[in-house]
Length: 208
Image 1 (tube, rainbow, N blue to C red):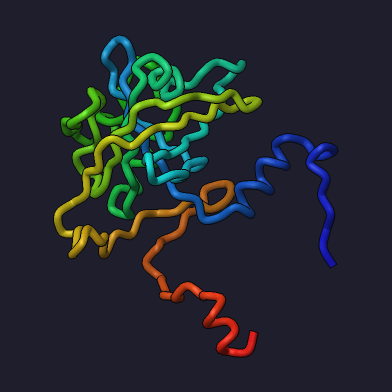
Image 2 (image 1 turned 180 degrees about the vertical axis):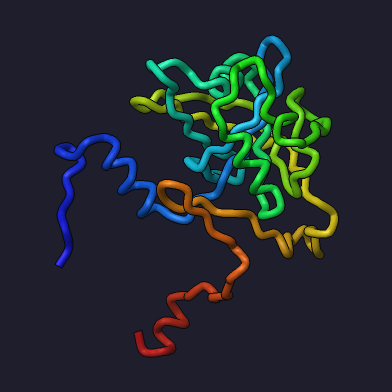
């Protein structure tokens, strides 16, 4: 038996809890952006993923703040037209948690978390120096989605720690943290297995 839950008759907060507890794990975009006043903003978002490789596109969905106002990251991306997605590994989890706090707009989460900016190559927004991987992005487009705004960014530069890059640009040993559900659940990505892709011919061969 399965419980049938109609989101049209369920409070939005309950729908949110169901969604983020079922669509798991989710990668975390630790986004650096810069305000028009020059303040470096750093904030994590788990409504994030890669959606295209030629060109390279990622999406980040950012909820509105109190009273429907844009959050700093959304406002900064819209203004500057660029941002950087830093990936969160376990050693950076405490700093990421600090950056998720509701800092005033004029205070940088990057420095409050004890981190350092590193220069980007193709965008003016700095990346997190301590991150093992970062993606420089230029804004392709934005789409309002109710209380959220979906930002589509084109990746224009990769930054990957030397020890992670193997032959033929294969990334090895990279284990970012994943976001699970409420209120504060995360997971490691170190428990892995390999499953070769099934072909139709192979399926027929084994009696499909």
